[in-house]
Length: 258
Image (cartoon, rainbow, N blue to C red):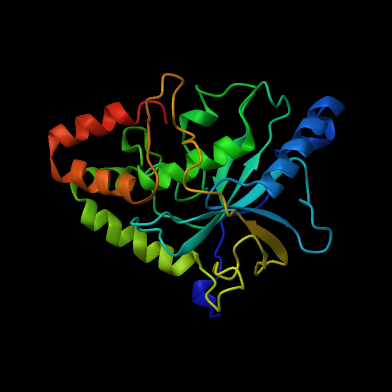
């Protein structure tokens, strides 16, 4: 693999982690959630673990890869991110950062910080890592430019989706990790499904084989869906952008809970 297709990460330092200061009960919860995430990850998510020990290098942060959703500028690439736990977790939410450079309205270009309501006003102590990662992946399908950290990307997304898509795709081609290609296994699934995949930094990631029929993490208690995934979600984005102002208003309403 050439150097242009490997990770070019943001700063990975995590001086703000507080795993040593978390109470035993909280550490037990974190360990349980990480085990669950490893055994049954959400669709399109890889948990990144240490290649030698097979476990995360620290309980103070959760490192994962997100598979670019279909029919988005990020399709065909993996993007690494981390959730950094606060000292009073789970009373306060973790902070989310992309480690792979990505062009997106809700990701800060200089730090990789992620802006999503699930990690802000919608956070509850019962929110799981799996849910957070699912919501972030949905954010790649339908960005929320009204609360952008990358104002240029947010404006371009609203004014010209095609131009936004070209720029985001260019960044993804340079910085994202390509999908592994190869022969199919005996069960007919592509190689890499439900198997460990060694990264360029010596870590190992495990890809989810979760069904598309799993419940949408953005579905509210009354059954309404606030975000989409797969082809239908990204198709709605194109349609809304092309419809001008009425499309923008529709998008604002559908994304209030992100």
